[in-house]
Image (cartoon, rainbow, N blue to C red; front, side, top):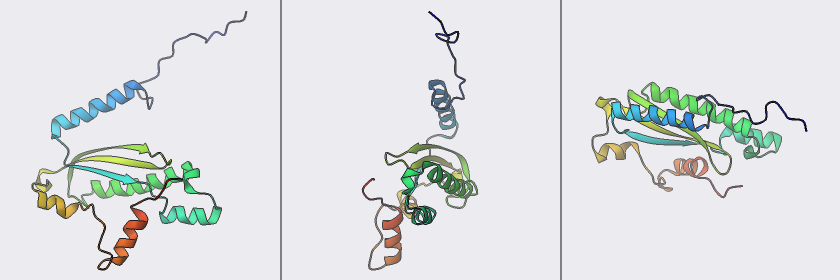
Length: 164
C-alpha cells in the first residue's frame, strides 16, 4: 500500500487568506477598534451592481449574453464604479470630510456584487437632527407627473425586477 507523503499533514493558512476564520476575526477586530475610536457610524450606504448600467447593456446587445453569466465583466465594471464612489466619498463631495469609513463587498443571489459602507463624518458635518437626514436620504419614488425623467431613471436603474 503506497502512502502519499502529503496526506494527513496539517496545513495552516495565513491570516490574510480571505474567508478564513482568522481573517474574518481580524477584520472584525479592526472594525471594533474604529468604532471604539470614532463612536457609532453616521451613515450606512449600499451600492448595488445594476444589470441596466449602460456598460452592461452595450455588452449584452453586442454579445447576446446576459451580464449575470459573465461575473468577470460585472465585477470589473462594479469595481470601477466603486472606485469612483470611493474617490467622491474621500474627497468630501457628498457629505463633506470623513473621519473614517469601511466597506465590504458581497454577492447577491442573482450573481451581481454589492457593497455596504459605514461612514464616520467629520464632526462639523454630522447629521444632528432628522431634518438634515431627510435632506440627504429619500426612500420614495419621485412624482411621475412632476419629475417624469427622474422617475424613469429610478425605475430603470434602482429597482430590479424578477431575478434570472
